[in-house]
Length: 364
Image 1 (cartoon, rainbow, N blue to C red):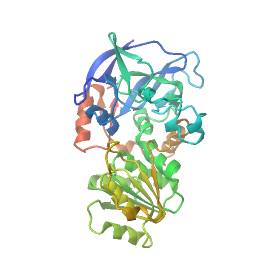
Image 2 (tube, rainbow, N blue to C red):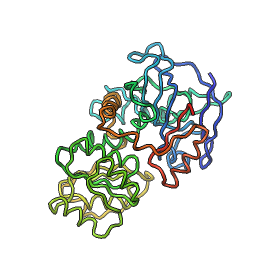
Image 3 (cartoon, rainbow, N blue to C red):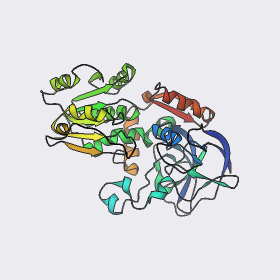
Image 4 (tube, one colour):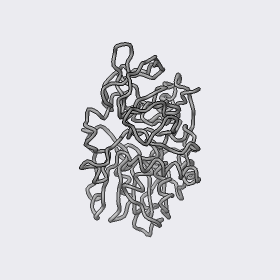
């Protein structure tokens, strides 16, 4: 089989659309014909070198498509099923999975987090898989636990968002912080993840959902997705204004979704004593983060979440049903749909800060 894919060959270089071929399926693997792939900041970090990945590689980790073939030992999936791919095809039974930490699954040793033995080839040159998916391609091979069936009624361009932006943001609210009915929430940063925190807070029944960002356009998006109050990040006396909305205490839950540097201190400042602060943004692993120690006191609980406590096999179908029932908005998060040939344009738009999500459509 020969198909088109977007290949990263060198850090700092644009992606190159080129023909690849693929090895045969292993017994526990699934071949997915990719229909739609979201363009995420993690893919951009791989392009710039801030997220280390072996090269050459096919990027993309937020993907949805249709099962084209299954290995001999695959159960529960059939040709023609609509699926969303997950970067954490956890086993469900190891030490960490039993402790509801599937992102640390012991069946995924560190080397395998970028995929098994290369399934993709450019001539005789192996091409690495990215985060067990590689969705910037017309086809991908994933482990059987890496393809989660969803209802056919969910459009695949919307469904692909479940794979990262939605599960990270909504999951952080429901699974990690476990926001309760009637509580108050502040979200710092209204990109794709932050907007899904807003949605998750609404789904959880939070009474006050405060969205904070530097962009009025993103704050307008947050209001459309359920924010009850919005503020510009540089607004004067913002912490005091947030306390005035919450009985003079601060919010019950703070979510940092803007990149940590500066925004984490602000998130802490907006919370009450005893609050939960969930960190979703990230920076270089060895970078020091200055914080005011007093903001860590008062029995605050500080959590870090990589993918919203993802249990994809359980979560994707639930989120898909929430979309079909009108409780989870996906269409509203997509600013642009582009063909695979325009993948570098999608990254240009991301760097300019003009979009929440661009989706690459393989059939355009």
